[in-house]
Image (cartoon, rainbow, N blue to C red; front, side, top):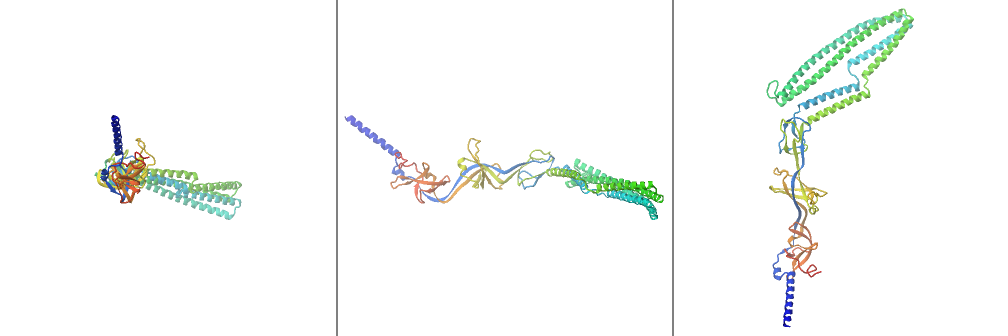
Length: 544
């Protein structure tokens, strides 16, 4: 019995000790511990929520520039690190051959335009026009004479005979005048041809001299007249002289050709006009003889002569129309196509000449020069970057990306330049995630402007994105907040010296303090670093 009592008393004592231990482990801290808790006060202040990250600095644009035409580098006008403006010349090729191609294309275009004008407006050469007009006038005069003769044969009269005699006299005078004038015209044309030939010889001589001088300059790079190294200005003068001399030869050749045509026309006109004048005299004499003794055969011959002269007038008129009337639509179209082709050839030659100068497509900084004077161009010649603005690609997690937006301000620092700081803004956010590294990430682009020469493309920048800002709001230390389900609580000291929980609604946080939207008042004292949740309420070990 006593054993059982002792045994029962021991069991009861053991149970009491276990319960006491559980209460000590799960219950509120002792009054002495609560008295030592750190306290803080709810205050008002400003708070800024941020997202941080890092990325490499890059240029807004980077372009590798290359010459669009082949050639030998003559000048390099920039060095690495130079700042250039849009359209500024960076390097130049040797343009001597290209300039000659442009001059040749211009001459070909001028020739094509001249041929088009001739087809469109008709021939304007005075000799051809005068010859055709003279032939028509002669044919018309012969026709009139033939008709008068026929009328006189059919009805001869003293006055008709007198007129026939006068025509014979006039025909004799006309024949002599025609011979004199034709001879004078031919002589003048021959003199002009001689002068043109002499001018051609002089132009050819000058051309040979200019060509030899230009070849000397190209081959030896010295002045032919002094033997010294030639300057750029003198070199341009020799080149221009060669081009001008070549053009002068072409012009002189055309003048000789035209003068020869004039001589040929004058000779043909002399033969034709004198023959016509002789025929007119012969006809006048025949008419006079027929009037004095007309016969049936004379009348028939006169009728035939009238008909022949009518045909001659029609032929002369057609020849004159062919000279002065513009060409057909087909002729004009053919010459217009020739002009268009010549214009395109000139444009291509000019483009090749323009492409011999490498220019900056935008304002920026030269980052690389891969040229040497005298080398033949190939590949990238110059690299140009645009530093306004500079850019940084920042990779953010899906939790961070939803907190930022286009236009958010960004603070930028660089570890390599301790005293440097700049501000930028988000200018773009990728609409889709990048999962190439098996981690979901989104890209945000930050643009900023800076002209500090110490800041180089490729440096690593530290970024702080300001997502939200609050002013004069209730704030508490993050250490004072405890989780409660999906919400937050803080602890205050109760009247019994034990901590009590208060549900709070929090807003933004900067990682150190958080905004309190509800649950607390300014000046209220709370536990700064609570060690654990309290047991009271439904979340305790014996709660619901």
